[in-house]
Amino acid sequence: LELRTWSHFLLGEGGRVPFGFAVDLAVKDWGVASGVATEHKVPMPIAAACAQVMRAARAEAGADADLIDVVRVMERWAEYDLDAGLGR
Image (cartoon, rainbow, N blue to C red; front, side, top):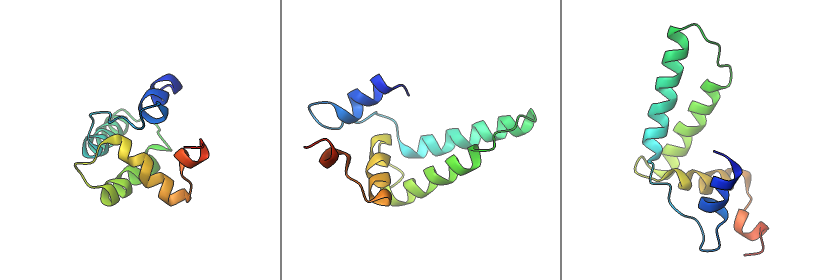
């Protein structure tokens, strides 16, 4: 997603806005993309790592969690709060 989109969902004045896209679907999409790449012999060296990160985030946030909830999970992993960093 481009920065303008992230700004709306993550950094908007009203706080975080759900994307309306479940983490479980993102995990599924990574699997589909990896399968298609394998089928067509297209190298995607980072895809496996991205899929694993999304699986770990799903395990922590829950399969029903919205994609925006992955940000909170990553904040915990990084021990950084974006809202605090923005002075909120």
